[in-house]
Picture 1 (cartoon, rainbow, N blue to C red):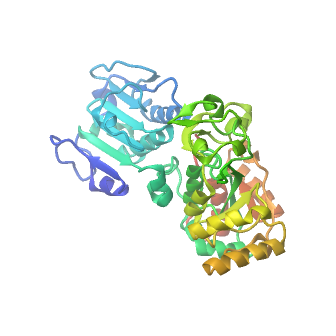
Picture 2 (cartoon, one colour):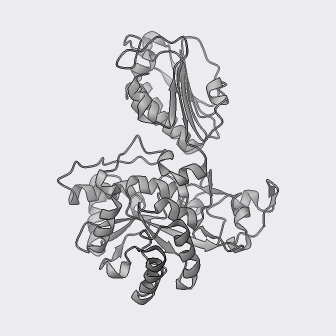
Picture 3 (cartoon, helix red, strand yellow):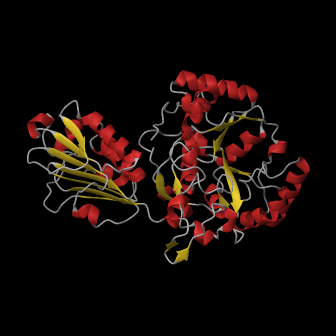
Length: 449
């Protein structure tokens, strides 16, 4: 591996075996040969029960290799000498590199005709495959045969608390597919733009980044921030022990694996049978896992269960502080004291915009005064911005081309300059093209799972 790869992700370790020869300046040892000279065929091994992100990762790799080698995807496979075998996810491979990893992250390992691309969940496996394609083999399958034996890249994200404390530790599933423009990450500019009704549109992420992560998940909110969103809307409920948590309403059935776990005892904690969040403590809720996207009510079909957990409002303010605005749905001014306590605890004075909870300018002014007195500063309110809201919740998922997205967003901006979106990178691309013409435009695609 080259030094360039050693530096790209400082959270990841890149190693070669002790017997590996020094690599050349372009990162490859072996001469460029057609893969047909090195291998007779290729098999990608993917578990039948794998989640869609893992399966899509395998399809992405197959698309790259298939023009050069006869390539199949199988649920199980016995490696054959002279064939290329690629394990995508934890599908039957026994490499020490993966078996000994046991962390939240991924491993990229290659030795001869065997490649292992495996993550601790489906999203991390997709990221591993994306990195292998983009950085390691540089989008050319021929380079698979030129990598020095003993390649090992291990990337440890840390635990959930680690990436909540430092969102740079969270590696998004789309990071090798799309890059947000620089202007989208300047929080002081976001405040100025929000308060100027005639400035650019404001991107309003509906329940975080539901395109790539479960709605109202901390991972989806971090992903939205990394995309450069201006504002995230979250739905907040209250547990039986008075903890403010995220969920779209009090019903756990659509968004979690409640039906699989209700009434069970998990890690010594007895779970209620009720699907009403108000009947659960936060400790009990923490045993449930979130479903992909918008949960079971998305597109009328059952969604996949992830290993992501229900989020507290405190975690939301912690990750959004000085990065993007927060709008709280489902709570009202009567809940202000509890929300105010969270803002004081996290110090997130400037990211709360008071819309949603405050039903009037007067209510917003009182809340702002409380925050300013406690923390010395405060964020803007919707009532003083002179802006209006627009956006239909799911229409964007029917769109495919840049022209269709541009037409849709132009219509929405004509209605209101705070645009709700489920396709954050598409909206940011639109703003970049039409409001930042003097700057290099962003990419115009962001792959869906």
